[in-house]
Image (cartoon, rainbow, N blue to C red; front, side, top):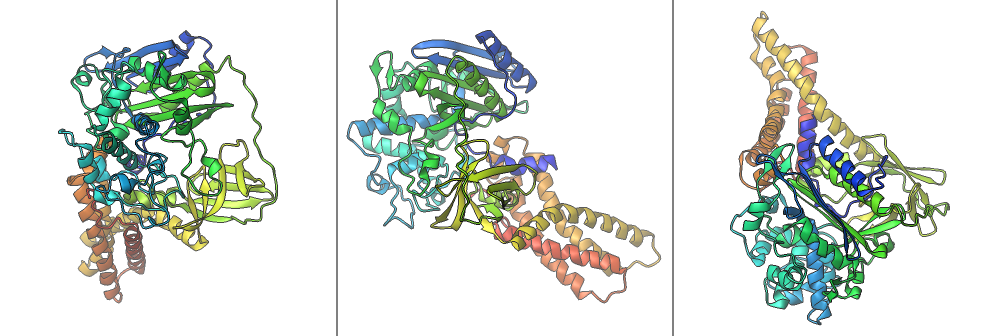
Length: 625
């Protein structure tokens, strides 16, 4: 069960934003030695091969350190020159490049995308009233979804041009919601912005960034490609002890950045010194200020998302507001954050899949960096008033990273909401964790223990009446639908067990009984035959997908597991209908009614499963397109 749930969940891990504070008891290192010892302890406890950490204060390098192994097999240590894959930290340079061009008057964030790059067609049903602008691309409000399995599975060792990459998967260039009405993370959208940099500057994106940022900052080995230097000094990525091969990411500007701890020093200085590195100004402070705020989200309560800037996000530790971006690729994780008010910053990199390790290390750094700064107790802004909105009911999420997992995430993310006097209670249906919110004068609901997590009721142009905010977007469903979903969820695990038990009993009776009735046998076996198509599909996934990278490459291309999903789900659907027909046709046969009714009920549930899977696009799913 654990392995199955892991497979279902691994695809839903989005490329990380800048990480929030981890709950629980946090060690408080008071010296750099204690900090390094604490980080080393985390690496040992979590079997993380290696890590690197950079801490900067103004122009001073406070810490530049490698820990553990960059290459386990060859016993190579991490050092300040070890190159790490930084994932979505890459996006910061797309934002910087666009802002640089805006400073030069060559483009404007308010420009319509279609006017600059008409050759990259984006289908936007709301284009007349809500065109996609450059700022929408960089603030993830364009309506364009994140990449598909087919895009993640594109591992072409011959790098495509950026234009070729954007043309690879036309189905992705569609606005799924009205631009400016939601935030939905999109690697594709950011790379479209990078292509605008190419079009306006007349240079490849990589060349433009190298000329205006990498070279002036001395980042000579920083790259978006699998360079010779990376092959020599790059940290090998690992997942559960398995070494990850290099994934040639389709949208390089969004997630392919590779750099060393030493070279990230000046990148940190760029942000904390407000656009200057060693007295050389590369970008204006006003541009960085624009990078740190959101202007494209045009909905009521948009102030809730004020921390979501131009590919630049806020993360909170006590009363301190860090900014930056985190990143993840198979086998590597990173976190790049700076504290503008105090000219502090840090970068953390590990060569392992475990994002929790990054959370823990980042929080240790924040504890250390802020230990001598003024700590203010920020009281939650809960102005308790009675709400006129009755939000009680059941809700399901409506934004999914991968549609192929919608059938599972819809139930996993289901929530129950109820009012307890002036308190709004929100509980995940499949666990006992409850969040409590208080209503304020803005028709918002603020988390009881924090003023950071806010919910509000809004009318979405596509989904209608929804709840939006810190938990994403959720839509109310009827209690009947909620109970149906839960019944399907639990029956999906119970029915196969009972079907197997009854089939074994019937086979025993058939082989050792006095009368061998084949029709009675097949009445019992058809539900098993049906469910075996799903069981076989799951077993193939378990045996072939060991890591996240396996999932991307195998499901994003024609392979045994992707074909098994396609064929297995179709066969399951056909067998489910035939089994109901066969069992009903032979309803008058003389056999144990217990066996008959069990088979009929199991067959009906298989048909219900079929309809549910079909409604969520899983029957005959071709994950490679």
